[in-house]
Image (cartoon, rainbow over all chains, first blue to last red; front, side):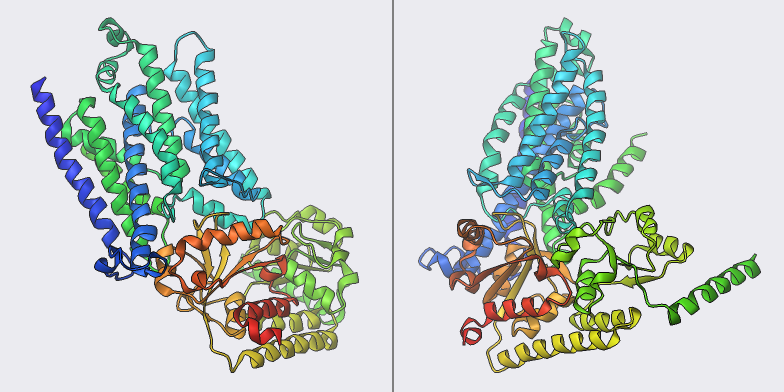
Length: 334
Length: 287
């Protein structure tokens, strides 16, 4: 036990420092040279302090959004891989992101202009879509028998993914071409939140999910031996699966409504972390969250710089880095 | 094999040549809204037998059948109308090839610069046998545009940002005009300096940082819908208030322009140019 605690503290300190360094460094990097002393000078009027607005409105919210989304998707990836006992599972496997995407695409195509609690219609609709997908998948997994079949969960999720993707294509097909640019943009992932409203909206849900995650690691370790083995060691299997499913789905929905369906983080980061720290979920889960945050912050810096003044969608960067990297991992692990 | 292909190509050429030179199209299908407007402007409106699903102007198009558009042209429906000229987009290679096989002439259109609009008008006039009328319309548009250019000539040129899309009620997914295409040309003509004129693209996605750094004096925002209520317009404009360090925001020079004609490179570009000039030089244009 003390050994686990020591390793947990060690890895948390190490990866926490990496994530903090990324979060502290990223707002200093951008296409424009800013004067930091002017940015933090409170005697200057905020209204026309360009340096301060570049730092606090254009950059810092993006870095915070990247940290939140990166940590959420990486941790959700770990939980889904444990829940489905499938190393290829991702936060998007069960249709959460496809539901979110359908909501967002509908909101863009219908030109919804509502605003609730500082959240735009697109963000709200995408979160509603993710909840809808979670509800459908859960209902299907429960419908078969009183338990909670992960097989049905997986099949329902994959089917729902395809079904929602077809609906998205259909909506795009009948929508005005002028909206296509906006929907494509959303589907590629984007952390340019331009303010703190969307982050504050996603934060409570994320915190609730992370509190639930804290309760999961020991049970997830036992579940990896199989449900019967876990049950014989006193794990309430169905309860654990339900908590894992809902908390990981909730955090994925919040992350996708904040930054769009940013791919690869939920699969690369967990696998990389397992290579570093082993298979114990008590260490894997926090380590993945910290590394996920650092990785996405770095990817967003690249997205801002690579083609400046043109913005690259961050989802393209994660896929370009993540795809080959994951293939290398696969080959290496044989 | 090659012999056969050559012979086939020759036969096709021979089949189309006399048509090209003799017959004036009487049954036109237009899949391109801006070209539909041009046809009406030069007096070929009565010969149009079908339009695209995105055509709304002029009102005469309301009674015409719809045959799809850029991504979903309905080839069967098009052919059933027995057209002798189909106007389609340059990217619709498959449709162009099918129509060629069916011996239907096509006029293939691509978006371009402001100068391409009047060039297309003249070309269209030649194709439909209304060259003189098309020349008058094109020359009229050029005269009107020159008039606007002359009026703003002596004015200082404000740095301008031309926004062509963003997420409603927020500054996410900002899509703006680069230094290419008819919208950039119109901005330039109306006496504004495009802050993204150095980017050789029709449109690009930008971050709020770039806008803060490039500090536009005026922000023009195009909405392709009818103008909503004043409240909604004010709420949309308020999305910019977070960037108060941008001169345009600080000085209340965020101008929202409404109307589908704003993004159609057709005969109504003079309206767009006037709207741009009015937004960039309010005191001058009011006189």
